[in-house]
Picture (cartoon, one colour):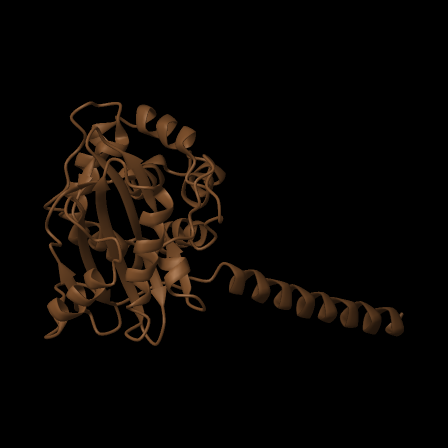
Length: 281
């Protein structure tokens, strides 16, 4: 009987150790890796304009008819280190999925399937975005999140069904990332940013996603939301996300190009522009 007690105690101890190890692994895999304390205002770095001009000069195809907006924030120093035309509104294309995801998760009370949110962000699934857009009020999503996050250069699309025509500035997109890193609850932050950290090389619609941040900053951890699309007059291409280097950074480059611009040319140009940040981040 004494032997059975000792054996039971030993087995119980092993189970506790195993569960502790497994729990530690799970906790590590789902850890809140992007949490930041950069709340309140962001200071302006003395070289912010120079850095942004350097980024623009590294756009090999930057020419008449091409517009670019840049915002880079060092989350550890809580300082803006690059800024170019950061308050101008651009059509968001799929970058608006950040707003759709925040709204769906924070208002659902757990009713929104995590898998749908993950797929919308990691594979940039338009079908999921369209379902959530319709189910949650379309343009009201943009209005709600803009009010909550105090976004000043964000406006819903004129045509309520065209979510990709939502307009945002680089400054507002950077503010969304700061919200996720600083103010969102840990579950929301982990769900969204883990999905964005696993963005597939090719999106659901077949478009290559690893331009800009992933291609220009190899070896860095990132969590990205890219955007691409066309308007009646422009080709739209954006690379946005969080990047981990010596510090954690928000990196946002929004761009529009002449309507006949080759996609591969634009992707390569944005990648080269982001590469110019490598020595900084």
